[in-house]
Length: 322
Image 1 (cartoon, rainbow, N blue to C red):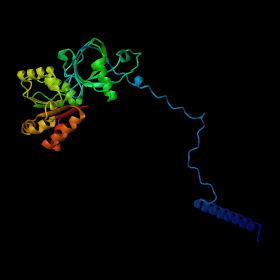
Image 2: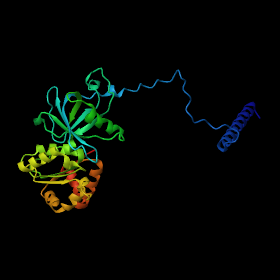
Image 3: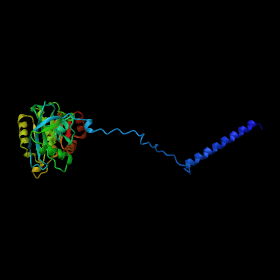
Image 4: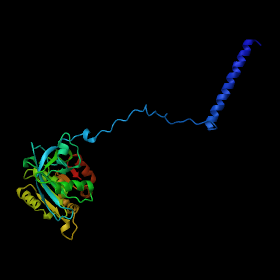
């Protein structure tokens, strides 16, 4: 046999040996015997090589809301003996030009020293909250209805006590006015049923004031003790006499043995509500979340959920709740 053939045999034998060895290694790795399993964790990064995380932005610097300076002109307790906590009526006037707004707008009030947010170098130290505006620009002021919330509700309670007790008449207040696209007024020719409770009264007020006398408007309102609110009584009497309200149903369950709610009144008024809706009427609800849930369920039973959904899509069923 030639030397060339010997060399070929040696190379072939070596290749076969390497193949057998490779198969043996792969078989043992597959069974996990003796050989160390591969580490699937990413390789550690050196502290020196690690890219530093970007600094967390100060939320105050991210967005500085365009607050304006206003003054508290007056504040009065509407019903001091209310079982749900007293309601306060506040009047605020701007230091500069009066902004424009529509019925359904809210005042975003900073409940702390105004310079915190009016001074470019200031930093907020308090919370802010949205309050329904119960007046129109033609009145030259913002009217708010605020319930003093007990200390057991930390955030809302702190804001309400600041507005109802701590801020003094004549003191500067920082606020901005926001339109609420979800609660804009309907056209004047649309019959309007307004349903609400408690401080939702402010939002209902603005819509009633925005409607011309002689339009079809129906107020269904309830609170535990608002019968003591003489201002409310006088306003409703005026709205009825001037034709701003075609119908007014008031429900005050805290004053009699009968625990009557807004939803009870809606059920009792089923026939006329159906008439107003069939005439193309709108239903606007303003007040507490609990009241809104109950009213929504009651209207769903009365009209059908499909009808409510269709009215909402057409802008005829709107809700502003808190």
